[in-house]
Amino acid sequence: MKSPGGVFIGDAASRLLPMSIPFRYFGSAVVFHLLAWLALLAGAAQVSRFSGGLGWPLAALHLVTLGVLTTTAMGASLQLLPVATRQPLRSVRWPVAIWYLHTTGVVALTLGMGLVRPQLLGVGAVAVLLALLAWAVLLAGNLRGARGMPAVVTHGWAALGALLATLSTALSLVALYLGVPLLERSTALALHMSFAAFGFMGLLAFGLSTILVPMFALAPAPHERWALVSCLLAVAALAFAAVAAFGVLAQPLRIVALAFGLAAAALHLHLMRRALERGMRRELGRSLKLMQIGWGCLLASLAMALAVVLQASPAAAPTLFGLLAIVGWLMSFLFGVLQRILPFLASMHASRHGVRPPTPSALTAQRPLDVHFACHLTALAGLAFAVVVDSSAVAMGAASIGLVGAAAFAGFFVILLRRLRGPAPVPLSRTGTQS
Image (tube, rainbow, N blue to C red; front, side):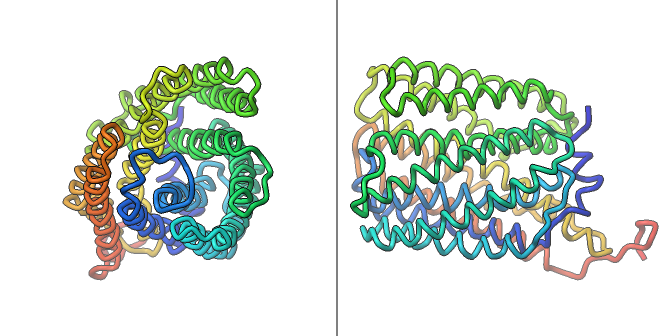
């Protein structure tokens, strides 16, 4: 089996986008991370029993899902999938235009939520919808001509299908706020949560993990057949959840959906564990710990969802489920990946200019990452405790700690860019030695 690390290092440079394109997405996600904790701080009084409705908690949620997670996924997929599919992106203008439309749309949408202005929310929703549809067209064009890595490609197609379902249900929810009912609110919410977190973002995370985790560990790629089985199990789980959302055998089908989802997650995590065990690089530090915490929260969120379905849970369980899925799983995993992939990509871009590039470790400021690690976990635990005891004061404290962690991660990103643009690099001769 081939090593993803070898694929990336061997011929990725020819398909790299200009650095300004993916890094503008990553930089925006860093800013939205800060804004998400600020919004949560503003809405701390409503956090512990949040179950939807306009206000700052909803704005904070979408600053995370659309601002942090989706923006990062867009930038990462535009950069990494052309390498995985061995097909360069055909346009570099469209990603820039999409970035402008998406970021302005997220700002308008979340301000409309926080300030309870449905018209502003509607304008932002349309902008985000257009941006994501344009990105989906770019991604579909790349997947259509893909050569190699069928598991990654299959996850990509499944994620795009889930994205269309997510956007459809989002429009239905926005229309309700504007007084135009399309779907019943409970149905639209159930579909939106399932297809956004576990469909679109979850399938993208699973698919990209089959590239990134082996690359980080310098390990062989996971077995394609079992990665495809995991993807198909996840798609089946989404299908059962969708039928249940319309009230057809709701409880039994939700239990079946969770069983399929658990099987998909368990198989995926087994493949990731095998890759880590077979890798030549064993010490991945805080990055791996964050990813592992994210994986643990994924399993915990499914268990919490089962408790909710069986009606064997306290009043706080639905909010805890969302917290575990979004902040515990997706955010933890994302930041574990980002702190390794950002220096790696920056170093690769530097190597394209005929100079000796700085190593990823030389670009990494470890102290801000240590602060972010401690603050992220403390904030996650604090929010969970605030939900259990129904305390706005604890929620405010947790959000404040999360804000400090977000500032620390932003510091890591700024330091990386400064080091990349630091002293003049050492030029290379044609043989790769110092000139």
